[in-house]
Structures are given as structure tokens and as C-alpha cells.
Length: 340
Image (cartoon, rainbow, N blue to C red):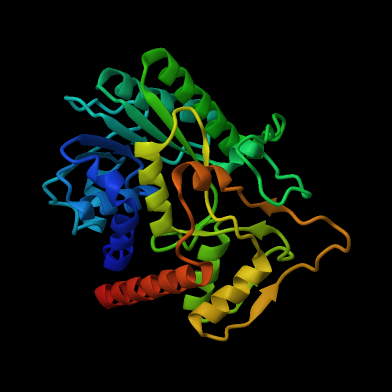
């Protein structure tokens, strides 16, 4: 896997430089560092070259080294193997911990994963603990609510087993707050929505990733539903800026929505992709909209992050799609060359 674009990493340094410089000389522990979110944090941290050392926990260190050869021998990075629930604690103090691992689908397993990382923080001198939660904690967004705020008291249905992810994030937020109040460290909670950018999976349940995959395959772009649900997309370099800022400057036990406030329908998103990639690939929509049916929404209010921390979306959706497509093209060519 190629490195993340240098220009994007420099964007993170430009806009989160003060936060990253405040980590100079300390040790930071990161779970989920091989995923979409974690990889942006790891690479931007190493790009900052501020004298910060990081320990990255991953299930398969050998695979990490194989897929990230540009990082495998970095002197500031140590890769630690093991299950999130049972990994052996590295020695020494870690003032900053980021728990960005994707939770196990089983609620009890996800809860134990978070508990184990919190136990590590409790026993290793941690002062600030960042947990990457999700907008899924709110449950379905009411159709008359254009932007969902952190104060909305909604929740996933307790009788819908398909909502395990949202319940896992809610339970983990509660556990983070409990540990923070009992043991005296700050728990920073970032509720993530939808994103664009290099390393977003193209073969999972992410509409934008699927659309980029369709373009790379020669089209058409296929929309499985009726194209009316609303989503919003923050570019990954902005995501990294927001997370570093929240880690250092956010308020404990005060959740922050992380995403774009600019909602677009899935059909509009597909049109953005065709325009940004300049391919002219056709769009196929599987279902017709139901007349009079309210649109489903998943769009955050970002007023808290903007007002309290000065955070904003800096890279527009169309530009983010262009960058994501360019990176996916280069990755595809690299793969074809390596297997030819």
C-alpha cells in the first residue's frame, strides 16, 4: 500500500500543527492504527516529526509491515500485536491514548475491548484518552431534523439486533466517562460520521467507496436504493486535523460530532463522483423514490466543534473526491504492475 499523499499530510500539519507540536517528546498509544482513521493519524503524526514516539497495536504486525513498508522501520513507531481485549501492556507511561479500533460486532466483546484499553490508560499515566465513537449512537435521525446535534437524546432501538454497532459505541462512551471521572484523566469523545479520502474501503458498505470502485471498473455507478437518503462527507485530511485538535484541546466527557455539515443525497453524491472523475460514466438507480416519503438523513451539526475548537471543513466534497479517485487510480496501477 502506498503512503498517503504528501500534500494531504502537510495539510494536517498546517492546520493541526499546534496540537501536534504539543505532543513533542511524549509517548502515544494507538489502537486501530491500521484502519482508515488510524492510518491517517499514524502517518500524520510521523510526518510531523515532533519527537513523539508511538506504539501501534494491531492484530497482525507482520501484515502491517508488509502493507506499510514505508513505516515498518520508522524509529518513532513500535508495532505491538495482540487482541484488543487481551494484549500485553507495554511498559512505561503513555500520556496520550487513542482508541480507534473498529469494535467487534458482538456487543460484549466490544465492551471488553474498550475496558482493556481503558485499564491500560489507567495504569500507564494517561492524562488524555481519545475514543472514536460514531453518529450511530443517536439511532435514526428524525426526518424533520436536518442536522443532528450532540444534545439529541435519541438512541438505537433495543430490539433491533442490526444496531449492535451503535449500542457498542454508546456503551463504550459510557465506560470512557466512568473511567475518566473515577481515575482523573480526560476522556475525549469524537462521534464520527461519513468521510472521503485515500484508504476508505471500496468493497464495503460505504457508498462513496463503492462509487469509486464502480468508476475504476468502467461503470456504471450503481445505487442500490432510491438515491434519496442524505449523507455528508468530510475529507480524511480534515478528519485528522479535527481528531488531533480534539485530543489536545477538547473538553473531557463532552462529545464532538466529526463530519461535514453539508448534506447531499446519494444520487447527488453519484453525480459529484462522475463530475470529479471526468469519466461521464452513467448512473443506475435500482429503485424509484416513494412519493411523499420523508428522506432519511445522517448529517451532523458541527456547531460545537466549530464554536469551541475553531474546526471547519477546509476541503470541499468535490475536491476530496478528486483526490480520493487519483489515489485509488495510482494504487490500482501499482497493484496491476506488481502482479503482472
